[in-house]
Length: 506
Image 1 (cartoon, rainbow, N blue to C red):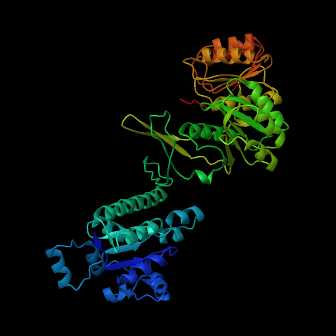
Image 2: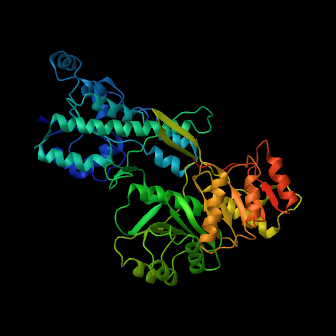
Image 3: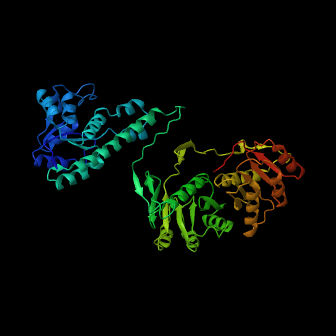
């Protein structure tokens, strides 16, 4: 146990600091401070020594230089052994046993303004140096690197009767380097904006343990601020698999957020039911009709507040998660009777512009697929052009295909996903699966449209589609045999448009 006799305190966030200062003062600790923190301590009636008096230099350059001095860093970095202690004595440098310092709010400033001079001024120099110095010398010095550690330090300090163990100081040092690495990463990523040089740097230390990973024998964690996007209103703890499915659900509904009432039903990240209707209840009924078998135990999401009529219909089926912009009071009361069902209020449709995953002994990163096709993106390649109604249907089908695992075919009719084939080793199998599912659930594929996530290497897919009565096709194109599919469509009065953009999900 190492007692604390001296402390340097210089912080931006002062909430929660008062109890620490009083505890230190009560144990006779000499406190050094600067600027606003010094004034704060003086208002508490606690004696405090100005760093300027220690260094014999005032704060200069608009406060940019206050603590950067050998009399400060010498007292922090000195090992408590004869050689270093003799040097401290020679130069009249006091030992500093505790450093409490936090950093200017750089991340918050970047989030709230584009004013570069204001952002640059929030790059902390003295604070980050004090944190690193104290953490490096953790065997002799305790570091409190952010407001998040105030309560922890105070608890340890009281338990140790004014001192900390080596293990406790090492834990504070670990936290200090977590703070500093996160801060440096944020600054780098700000300066790296718009730079074409690929660099992978991410730092997220806000972590929530999950019940388990994909399977019970795997441990799982979520890193990030889930509460910024979603508010959990009811249900058991969200699992790893829930999160993966929730992400897929939010991303597909993001495409329909401005449409008429829309419902999507997902299972294992794939949409097995999607429909747009004039009322939310009708959208639910139509989405469920797409595949009421796969919907069991699924993830449900809509783009309108859930009303009681819709809630009563949903409640007849077992599900894992229901996501909506809001829930009307009586609808929520009805749904919340089932305590384990997860109800989430969606605050926003945030999407990262870049996405990554671990592979082999490294990481792959890519631009997120944010391309949304419009009528202007469609190139009619057949003699028969799609009608205005068919164009809207094709764009709807294209979105559905975009959010299914490849190889993918989506069949839609009247803005309803009537058949889907996904995760198949070839596109013909995906199409046959889509047609089979449509017929299994009572849909007539005559007059439907077909979307493919990638080009057709042969004409076999459009041949099968024609046999099923499909009248219009949307696909990216790009095969050396595109003309084979186009010619077949021309011979059989089918319309085909190409987007030039592949939406493959591996």
